[in-house]
Amino acid sequence: MGSTSGLCNAISPLSNVLPASQNESLSLSTFPWDPDSEPTHGCEGLVFTGPLSPADIAVLRQQVKALEGAFLQYKKVELFPHGRDVGQKVFKSAGFQKPFQEAQQVCAQAGGQLPSPRSEAENHALQQLVDIENKGAAFLSMTLSKVEGKFTYPGGAPLVYTNWSPGEPNNYGGNQYCVEMYTTGKWNDVPCEVTRLVICEF
Image (cartoon, rainbow, N blue to C red; front, side):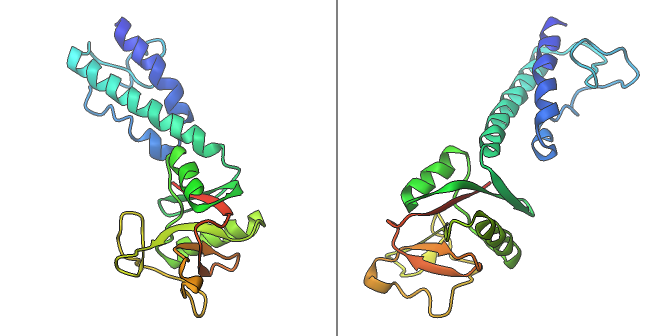
């Protein structure tokens, strides 16, 4: 039972701190449980009715590893000061400004990406965050495809929702390949070299 107890000791603190959506990845339903059994120390709430096979233990170790990875990402996200959630998305502000490429790197290192609002509700949630931060416009993830001449999501997919300001995008000066969101929620195309508020989508 030593191996099982060790796994429970690793699982318990993770399952207590992770949000419900992350915690669901700790799926032990494939193993027999008896809620009336005497709990193993460190396994309160996770009571086995019989010994685990090496294959069961291997599965548990994989799940613990996945949870540890999710927990590390969760801690990175929590370093961002302000946020808004809508549906399955969470928008978090880094609280500082960067050029587009550096902003992308900030979000990627935290396990996210620059925002891609795909509905009015998502756009509104993001607009509220931009407004509260009071640091001006924020970068969005979309960029101008030089091949198609249209703005696309990362990976090249076409936009399913837009909220351009009147007369935009206009590619003024011929170098406006990135997109910013004003505090009003409206979009504008800008050069990627300008610095804008960094907000990440998770």
